[in-house]
Amino acid sequence: MTGRNALYVQSGGVTAVINATACGLIQEARRCHEQIGTVYAGRDGLLGVLSEDLIDTSQETDEDIARLRYAPGGAFGASRYGLGALATHRVQYERLIDVLQAHDIGYFFMNGGDGSMGALQQLSSVLAELGYPLVCLGIPKTVDNDLAQTDTCPGFGSVAKYVATSMREASLDVASMARTSTRVFILEAMGRHAGWIAAACGLAAEREGEPPHILLFPEVPFDHERLLTRVEACVRRHGYCAIAVAEGLCDQQGCALPSGGGLAPDQPNPPGSVGRFVGELIKSRLGYKYHLALADYLQRSARHLASGTDVAQAHALGVAAVQWALAGQRDVMLCLNRLADQPYRWDIGAVALDKVANVAHRMPAAFIADDGFHITEACRRYLLPLIEGEDPPPYRNGLPDYVHLRLQLVAKRLRFYAL
Image (cartoon, rainbow, N blue to C red; front, side, top):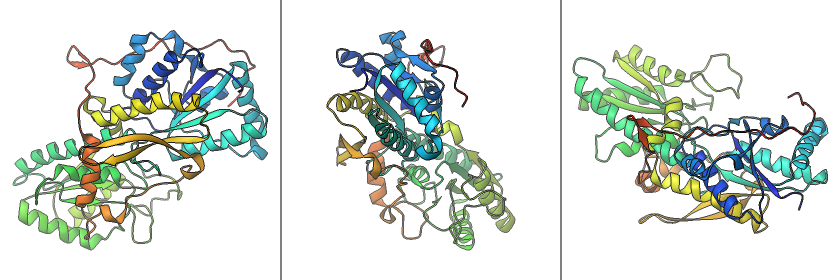
């Protein structure tokens, strides 16, 4: 064992419940204080580790740590920062070892998505090669729900609840004005590679003809003419058309839309560009006025409408991470296993990091309707338990009352390191 203290890192895009995981982890580490000393958090993720900007969570009160359960965003800061190969980035890894040794760190918890699990796998492997074996555990998190080997990803259930609610409420607004105003409503949801969030919008429709009428997924190649035919028929029948589109919509050749923007292949479209592309196509060809809503950061930060299931799972994973680490598990990512749909039952397991690192889990064909424009009953059965329950934050003066942590940094023991 290399050290007694623990280091927790929030990595990648944050969610409405990532701090619930931090809450569970810190609370459980305090309960197990005889085995684990101080829990440090990297300020702004791995960047904080490299720069020795470590937050001492022991300076936070038990009450404030408990209130973390209700806070959106990343309480300790997160970043999208990858790790290079040892052959070209040896100095980087030697710096990481220096920081870990200086602060007696033996446990490393990374809370992130598939890219983060790739970074964690790389970190663990290289440090072991350099003679600093670290107990590394991954904790799943991503609103996109595209992590492999887990039933769902903490953060997704709350986004699903938010977009389904937003779709239902906005559609009622559009329906009431469609005769003299907007005929087409478009909600652009996150999801560069997978359509899980767009699919969740489909939960708003419980009966035939209810909105959303059309869902557009990255998994289904976009067909201009089929869409226009469907939109026109929908407006004729219902007076309006509500559409949810994933930001990663692709054409028949698998290229992200809108094409011709001069972007690099791996560079995402600017927020709203896909929804606007769809809206302008409909307007130019059918003459219908449209309104575009961009959920963007709102969908992943809406802690006031978080799913009770999502919060409970996120917190439980934080607790389990400490327990599994103390039990000798390493180089694994914790995962959620579905035991039953109704009533929804789940437990926590683990999977080797190399099974999830940089692996994107897309929607299965069985979850997409035969016409490619909606979800199936199988998808609905999968999604519904994930949005169940409410776990609202405390309110003060009519607004959510979120905790403000001290975020006290430990004294630096090493030389300055230029990132």
